[in-house]
Image 1 (cartoon, rainbow, N blue to C red):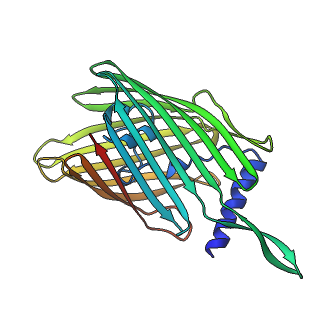
Image 2 (cartoon, one colour; image 1 turned 60 degrees about the vertical axis):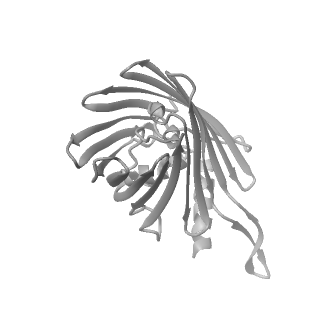
Amino acid sequence: MKKRVLILIALSVLAKVIFATPYQDISELGTSAGMIGLGNVGGFTDSATVLLEPPGGLSHAGNSLSAFYTQLFGDISYYTGAATLKATEKLTIGLGFTHENDGSVDITGESNSQAVSQSQFTPTTTQIVGGIDYALSKDLNIGTTCTLYHRNQSKLTGIGAGLGAGLKTTGSWGELILYGKNMLGGKVTYTSSINESLIHEYGVSIKTPIIRTIVNTELLAQIRNLSELGVSLKGAGLRIYPLETPQIGINLGYKEKYQIGTQIRSLFCGGISLKLDQLTVEYGYDTTDLYQQENQHYFSVSINY
């Protein structure tokens, strides 16, 4: 069954190439266990993984390293990694990646009136992100990212690039990020000269404290528009610190995911974060929209130095 599912995934991706539909951004799954547990609301993570989220929040990370890994169906591997550096008092820079390895897929043929495997290929997708963030003032930051897209699908290889930008403002009420991804358009061009257009994404994210007592609580929310798909997706998260210090955080979230046929599915998620000095370990859980895998667990780690 797993092999059949993988073949269907491969055929789906190949069909997208043939009919030049929008390029699928693999980072839609999430960049870390913490982000997934908070409804995929991005831009407010205080680790290097924020580089892979909507542009505008890079200053949160400072000097940091982050890593995230999970498996889907037992055969599909998904990785993220990032490093950020506070180069000056106002400037933060970073470099990171998202990678998906879909496992071996059979290419079948016919022998003696039976279907047989003639060869195999491993579909892979990689997105490399570089970014900078500059503090225009105490309460205003501007950030920009460049993403390189690479996909290998059997004998087809696709390459493209997109630019993103974000503006973050802060105050006693919290933080607000306005951002755009692939703002100048762009496309992924395959060796067959067939193209997939990069999706224009525009959104707003907000984080605000709603309770400031011994049990500190933050509300995170995001809405983003995917222009080529004609949909707007919402997400929300609640981060609760049951102690006076942020060593332990409990995450609850809600998010909307786009599915084929312009359907939008509502998913619920949660998780826990544990900070041990400079090390942060996070656990996330969601009711995924993946076929035959309704529940998924995630783990990620980051270091701030």
